[in-house]
Length: 178
Image 1 (cartoon, one colour):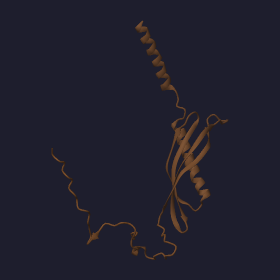
Image 2 (cartoon, helix red, strand yellow):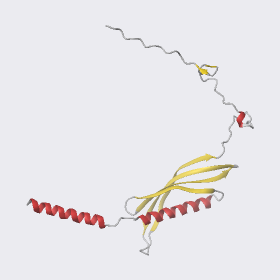
Image 3 (tube, helix red, strand yellow):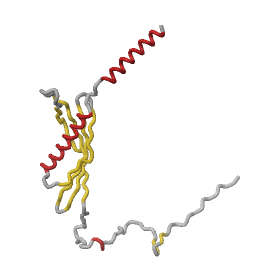
C-alpha cells in the first residue's frame, strides 16, 4: 500500500514539475525591454516638447515589473538641465507608470496603455549658488571676503589663542566601603 501511495505522489510531483518547466511566463524579457525603450522615448519627447530649451536629458534608471494579471509597473529616474534666470539648473525627477495590456487586432503585436503616470520627486541642484541677503543689506560683490557670522545670542565656548578650553573633569566619588 505504501509503495502505491509513494508512486502516486511521485507521478503527481513529476507532472506538476513538467507543467511548471514547460509553461510560458506571462510576460517575457523582450516585452519588458520594449516597454522600457518606449518609455525612454516617451519621456525624452515629452521633456523636449514641454521645455524646448532643456539640454543633457539623461534617463538614470528605468525598470519594469509585473503587477498582477496583464499589468506592468514601470519606475524611472531621469534628469535634465535647463537655464532659469541666467543660471543652469539640473532637475532630477523620479516617477512611476502603470501600464495595462490592451487587446489588439493583430495577435503578434502587444498593445500597452498607460493607465496612470505620476512623478514622485523633483530634486533641483544649482550649478552656481544664489546669494541671499536680508532686505536692508547690500550683497557683497566679492563673496570670498564675506566672513561667517555667529549669532550673538548663541552661547560660545571660550577660545583663546586658537585653544578651546573645556571644563575640568571631575573625578567620580568612590562608593563608601562597608
